[in-house]
Length: 631
Image 1 (tube, rainbow, N blue to C red):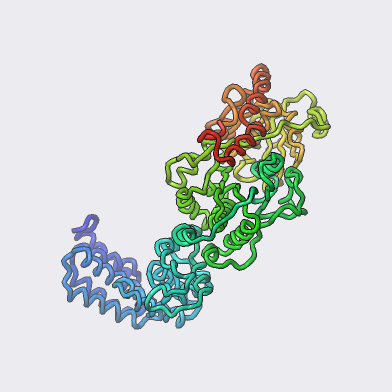
Image 2: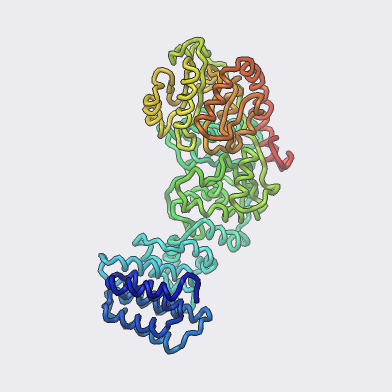
């Protein structure tokens, strides 16, 4: 007797069935008890009785017959005749159902007859009215069979139909297991003996239905590269980034391009981005590059990729096509891509073209924390695990914490390919504005202590937590003023929230500014409340301006300063903990003066632009630098 089932329970269930005979939930409980207690004759009789209840009981009959069949398969001593009778009863009920073809498809699938199952599922899709919810169920289950099978030619029609109807399979990632079935697509060979071969472009459409970068990289690395044409590199460098928008990574990207181009190591440095418009925010840091808008190549989401680029998801494949054409045209000896998506594009296009060295430079913690495109992000670990096999690929990380996090995400051990390279920052320029100028501009009292921050108003920066902490500091130190520099999607909401917190006269929002160092110079303490960071550039830049820092303990934050000497880490990300630390720092004039004096030398020691560029060029030049990078 199975655990949880007893004779007493069956008696109780029978009583419920007598009183609530129209409720199939109690009938199903009874069938479970009968199977568990080995009352198989009565079980089959109950299944037969479902015929009289009509076709609405087909689902219950299916589950009951299937349970009996599975019990037999698992070794239970089930009389073969009883089992056959149960199946016949289910089939009798199914024959009278409006969803007959769908149920027969399920039955054939369970007994291993996938060909018959596909036929029934097709009939269900074609014959059932669109208003019947089981119509889409039938197509989805047919797609599951196609994804997990090995007869892609036979099943091409159902796969393409599912794509056109935007039907998502419940097992889409099973596609990876049959990726090898496409080894011969490019040559137009049969995928199976029963295939009526569509044309190659139809195969590409079919592949796009289940395409993931993982499958495409498998094909590229296992099949395409061995037969590639020779590549004769020029002494040029190609840098690929997302955009030149106002962000910490984008600023480092822009400064790196300018410094490397000026170094004269390469005959030419090419700059390519995924998104750019000289009249939009995507060009915010264009002046810092020293380039003109005409010097920027946009890897646009357009064009029709050929095989094997067509194996990638459509939008990604188009950008890879643009990068591939640029690489073939310019033939750089090194490609340097900034962050995950540009890295995937650069790696696929660069390896396909034959570029001998490709750097992928990561500036955040694992990308899944920052991206909403989960369907693409989910494939990154498998892609980068494959890329780790290639001698052409080198990885750079802005902090040890970042490298460790990516190794954990990819389920690999950190190897010598995981190189650390701290970001580099120029010394703050001498600007026409002084700290007193900024205080007057923001109408700040000349002797008030200032707690400030600089960030993009995005959920990952937790601006509302920052404001909550500021509100608590205000209660303890009413004369302190607060400055938040930057803009973003949550800027307006943050202003309204601050006003509701009673900070209207004490919290000042500057919006987006270009002379960030001027605003930093008037801060007495810098506070960061992020939930995720690679290497927080703002903590370094604050110290370069002689400002002590306070931060949540995330990512590489602890690598940017010396806790206790030039700043403090807060392990508990609560407004109370942040406010308590901020009040302690603002109330200790001696510590703040000492920390301010140490901040700039500390930042220059590890994060100067000269140190950064020297190490980057050494990495370009046959890695004449220690394997662990920037420390």
